[in-house]
Image (cartoon, rainbow, N blue to C red; front, side, top):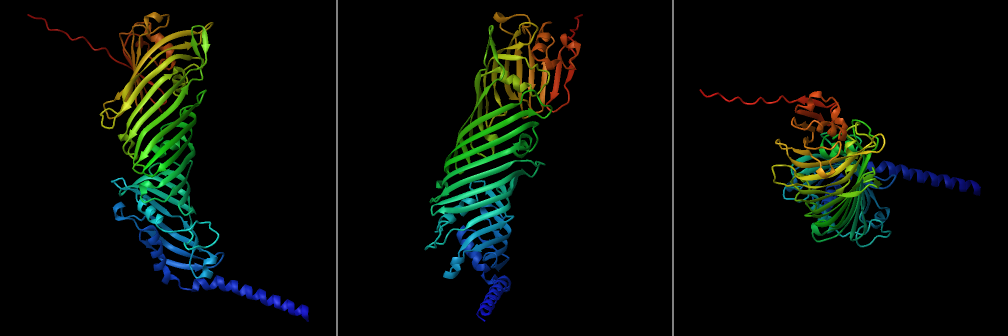
Length: 539
């Protein structure tokens, strides 16, 4: 009988456990916890300093005890608009088992499903999250992963999945957003917060789809004022095609192809921090065709951010530039030279970069590097053509100038053309000036100048000029009618694409070449000579 009694006792215990599980699963929905919804909303509101609204609260026990909040809304400060800061259809709050035995309600995890978050900057430069951050910093909390309960409640692990983050300037919602966002916030120690986010950047007024991945991780510490909050943050935007990146940043496809990766590090306080950024562009080309050589860009920038990311001061960007082509000096072929393209700027409003004061300088840039970039626009430039010399200049952009850009650059260089036997070295001098195009846009005017008399040789550009105007839509080249007979053949030797569709009359008549960046071909136009004015004969 003893074995049978033990078997019966085991069955009874199993049935009791099963009954308890059934009760745990079935009873919580029958318990009305909506009467606590106002208390729950008030508690959350006190922690973040903004009114909180809930529609319904339900309790569950399995798989872990917790509460489900439906239609969770955090109201906005009227100073920043009327749209809620956070809206989520469902929020799950998991309770700590140990807190139930002590009679205290302590939450271990808060999970938001498909939340919508609005980040707003008011016209006075303040951000809506400043007050929320400061209110949360005043709440005494223990670290999230603290094993044992203490006098202060442990800070919950807050996470969000499939969220959306919108950027607003005042009442206007910008087209920039982060979608499919995964967010996490926790407290590793009483004085420090950790934040992590992974999302997909989008722009709602374009059809950009393959926009890569955005990641950010930050550490923030407590402070008396928002501008004094110490912060260390790293952001990365990677695996994004350049065409899609241009859609996100500019709102349209610029016609560039390749892969882009951007990183940014912030160190200091929210009100005064140093920024370090790196930009890597690989396999750069135009969308029209694939050239023999793809270009790469590696740039590094530094700046000082003040006013809680309002102003950028002392922006300094540098990009080492060189050429894969060798240089020729006399009868010696030397390795490619290395120059620098530098950008300095002051940006009074980071969200309105058009008001920035920008300066761009070229110092000792190898013209072969510029030649490699020109090959991205034309198949006609021979692969064996080399360029030697130096390209120097500077350009500037002022916030209150009518012309968008102004400045000039000069190239005192030579082109080494492949010929039967030894290469032919052709001197080339050019000056480039950026100025307004008369329509509010910018244009680059390039003038090919006569070569130095001391270096004049067969094929030199002696006594003639040609003008080139470049803008966002394409370029226009003008060949003057009064150029010497040998000027045009010498110019075509240096720029073979000019010969495509060129009328024979261009040798003696003024011609204008027009080509759009994304156009299929270039167009030549003959300019009719102006008849000389006739003077009336006196009687």
